[in-house]
Image (cartoon, rainbow, N blue to C red; front, top):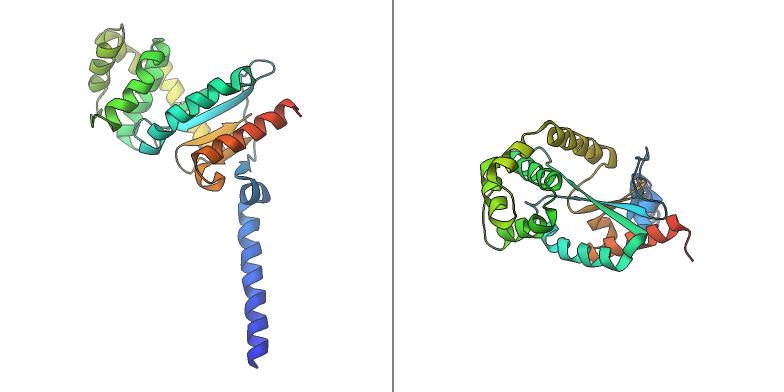
Length: 215
């Protein structure tokens, strides 16, 4: 085969492979930083608000970096969004303890005292929370709650139910890593596809605007 033919053939193969890669990602993911879910998920957002679901783990350092950024964005977006949090485990026992920690704090209505504090304890103070008892002792030190109440909440049927629902949502959204954002039960924003943490928030805001029909 002549050199010119080889070059033309190589270019054709390269183009086919490139298009194949984009098709595999889907046009939304490849070009806009999000994926459209095959099966939309129900949401509980108030009328006029769009649900934004954060998939995270207290054990994830990137989530620790993202937490203040997301908190500020949530304040700026105001009533246009309702942000909910879904702790993931990815099959890690240590992350399962931390997921229970989140749901227990939610059940005890102490998230305002514990959420940022637990991130700080793990990623700035180097503390380890591998047992429910570790979480209970910490929560009792930062919030008006007893260790017994924390342990009861972490081992409760309600928390078990939420943990199982969270796992189903992770699978339904096909979450590849953390942090990640779900919007309106229809889209998943991945940090890599969005070009970083600020990119995730920019994409989320554009989807919220689209969902609300804002101009």
